[in-house]
Length: 557
Image (cartoon, rainbow, N blue to C red; front, side, top):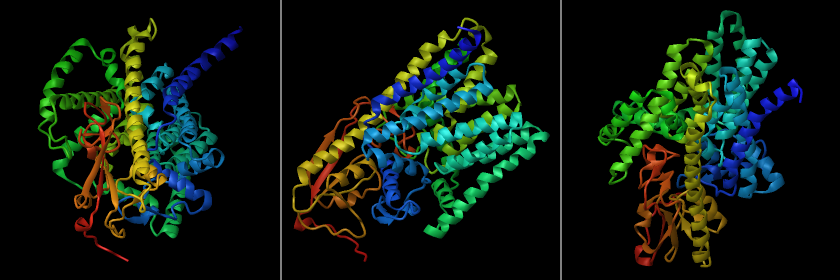
């Protein structure tokens, strides 16, 4: 083998490793049931197949009554166009759609690698630190917009950095168009415009005119805003921005709980950095942190979070304090990076991490793992730069010491994703069982609760209860999940309980359980993204309405 062949094989090996790790991590979950907001993306895709230019021109009962889709859906439609294209050839089967979403996941991983190549000596390890986190693996097992957005995000940053350094108008134009695609996948992609603009300003006076390429996405997205206003009577960009922040109106008392929750989600969702702490810091710092974490648990138990379990046990606050400490570690690493180097690359990475954190913790309507995901590649690069700059002796024998921490991180990723997989499966199983048990009656069963449960209940003949329009007759049956949102238990209270159905997800770990105080998809369920606990059964309450118990309803035409 000549020198050129040897060089090519060495450069190809990291890519092969990354692609293999991604596929091995995601393939076991390819048959996962649709969950949380995935039905929204699928319904939009189905509508696109018949009305390709009117993507939100239909109505949904998602908040308890029938509403225009444009009022409910706060994400742009590009990922639904992708789903519609895939489904045109393979149908709406969960397995086929999830396999199709392996491509965005692989694209995000490869983009992170090439971007890390611009900033570190070891882009393979930087990429593994970034992707071996629950937030990336779990997000990549859904058919929502997050991983596809991340793929466009990292590739746009890569081409912009390359274009800024070599003055290539071609790279800058590609980056600008990727910003458009990113923003039309998820509106968080708009953050690329100020991020890349500031990076260009810091890069030097001779390069500032390159920022003019950012006028391309600005112009296209302004056109999108105007076009959606004409079609739906509301500009969807400004509408989504308003929705993201309306729940976080200025509340001084909530600032500290929101900050702690943001740190908890950052540390838990990006848990690989926690396992790297012994390599990042000296023994004294690690020992001090180990002693302080239980003390911090006591302090956290005094904070007035928006929601906690009714009787939180000591282990809950211990897990919360560990995640908060991991989140603090990430922000300290970013701050250290800025302290050590004031170069344009540093400014880009630090603004990327800090900007995402501020949005997720202080601006967005709710802290959730999906809002933490965009910082994962930057965190991997920041950690790797710290190790390279402060642990030179460690790198001389190789990176064998990284195997154990990253293996532990991968194991946590798989367990958390398995927990989310089994949680989604309970909704599908419950809908099937309810359909078999109550679907044969003269009137189909009503149901409350949305997410994946709504998708599968409608497949099995259930009808979503509309609190403004539905008329319940004596003898009707209604089902409501205990662990759900947008439901009205006061209606259920007027019926007579027939059955409480229980379905067991993973018995010791959960990503979304209101009673346990864990909410990966929304901190409204608790300030912790996932939780090790017990007694995490999913309960579905079935009631019947006899003549004497018929509920009172407000009827509207």
